[in-house]
Length: 491
Image 1: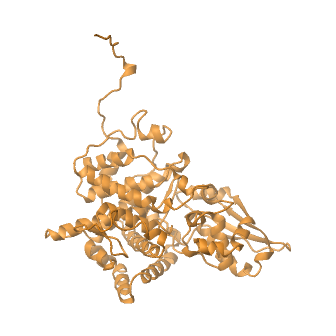
Image 2: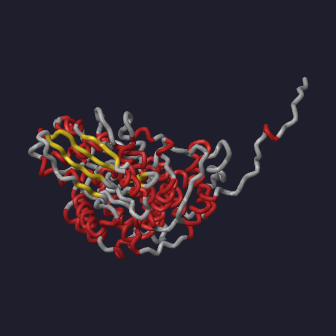
Image 3: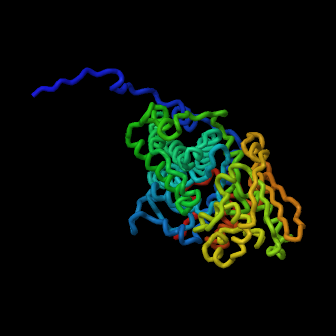
């Protein structure tokens, strides 16, 4: 039996001519491979970022909802030259270790932040970087070769920060419903492939795999679905990066036009057909300008509002029942991401609620991680009573200066009005203590935060030893990664 097949036409076939790699993949790969970081400020900030991030992870180990996610996938698994998870006795393969480290880093929403068209937490990349560096260092030492040093880790951090942050400057993933942990996966994949010895071509291939994975929906950060996935999503992303880098180093092919392919590429499928835009080259800008969450474990758009509430606490603590309304003036991003009313279902919901994060310090004078827990919330009905009295307004200047590259403020103001017609003064704070403009004020507070967090996990003598090492830039940079990680392990 024969059939008649009509001749092909150009409209019915796709070109199978394999294109050159997308320009962004090539640019990132060349940056990771060849760019020399010569900024002392970037390395010093990266050191502070490293210790703050590890401290946040240690503090998270106090919370069972976090620690239930830790350890090997299969209980009892042992791994030769496995990567250590700080503050624990876990020794894991680098993929699983990256998830564990990423999970503890992000659990309390207390590590660094980058705010631009897209938001994110660049130190989330440390999960994959540190796990890979520890594994590679132990293998090297076992074979009589030198370990990687902490300077190698800091360099990888600076470059991962830069990749994530520069893409985020003008390209909003949240406006198309996608989550920023995609950028963690991309940035981690690039620097980890380089750490594994990857060439420029291999980094391009690995990056294409990171983009083709697409992006999770950010619905787990917003009402009505806000929940604990937001606390392990970055760990998942940086862990996936380790896996993709390792697959690539085994020879897996890339997808060169993963971003630009018509109909099937990332731009057309997930970014409404719009290519990314860029206003600056990759360097060390992001690390130098990163925001530290120093005082409060709170979503960053609320940091200055919480500072305002702490200032007003003394004036209002005896008059809480007399409050008629609380006016909070903020910027558009805060309104879009964290302004909520109604029942807050879990801790992850509460630490992304502007009204909750400001009500607590108005009542108690502080905001700590335990204030988000169910037991605390359920025992203090005044919190929700104050939430109901809050009026949220936008100041267009705040919104404009939030996006201004020369300012990047995160401004909030607060004023409280009482039933008798009196009011407090209006408290306005435009730059949080973790901002680059307040570094001199902020770094001593960050160092005290790190010391406190160490004390939640280690004896006094070990804390002193770690603080002494981490306070010395040159000594820390020269430290072998495997020895550094051993300091943070519990045997």
